[in-house]
Length: 459
Image 1 (tube, rainbow, N blue to C red):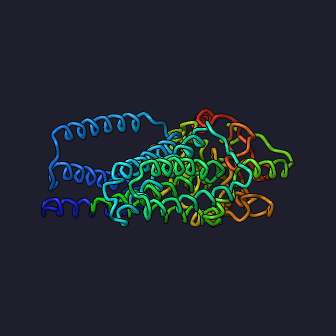
Image 2: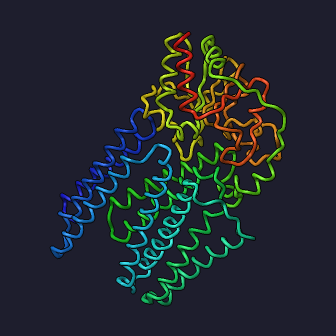
């Protein structure tokens, strides 16, 4: 590798590290993403034009066409995607990363048949890339609502046997038949099938964890292909993505008070859990109107807003920011309670509220906001469900028992905005809705909040 390319790769690596560090805070995340993107662009250009080997001119045309098409499609998709569809987009793009790794493995298979280490690397890239590709597509379908949870009989046993068979099959190819393309295609097909089997039984409430885990696997696949080509940037980038994704996965699991194995093998939030939990709460609910809710908020000293997926569905982030500003002008202390797994992907609520220019210092994480609820006059829950369900504390038989939640029930008054009494993503009934302090404000979040804002303006 020439010295200029090495220096550029070093600069790119530094950009990745700095960008990843800046992604850890909402205020610097946009700049961090830009720095990482510039670093990646620099690495791509340098790799194309500063390599040490001969490349036919037709290849440059193909590379240029691929870059152009990919850039245009990526830009159009990212610009047009609704905030509610952002988790699906992340899952889809993540799957493409895995697909790239498996294609690289297929292209390189047979080129290094006498080198067991290289062949092992290729096999690993194909297996991990295939699992990530189909697994991410299934996660996308679930998030999109076009696929339900499917639990095959003895699915844990089936999945464990399949993954062990994949490892054994891959080892056989490396040791005994590293040039047989029929075997590699069979391995590819089996890996693609396992990716489907891996994600299908996992319940909808665990999708944030699954997305994070699959993202980690994509990083590992990228690092493996980096080892294959001896490319420092691919290795470093893959390691950063893989390690960050794995750390985030464990953070998500901790936020749900569950182990990673329980997420993968427990099928939390699936049909069985939902059926078992339905109808346990009972009791009656108390309905309210925008006018009555406005009176409560107008005379409150402290208000906490709990955003959830319903807020994103209604595209009501700008209206809720207007409500927050209106209350602040009236002298009300307003903040937002952010649960780590609220929404459909890690950080979903932070991204949603940042889009409407909510001040970052008003976004308070669960551990810091929970002690404030007893001194809060009114909590306004908009579209959140499972992350405020007291069953996590009170019902040992509940699938979410032990999961850390926002302690909304400790507030003096609670207003919950929902379209209906339907269960949340975990498929279980919410005890909070039947609390004597809770008033249900039914309706689409955008419409209900707009009416609420108008009522407050007239006071």
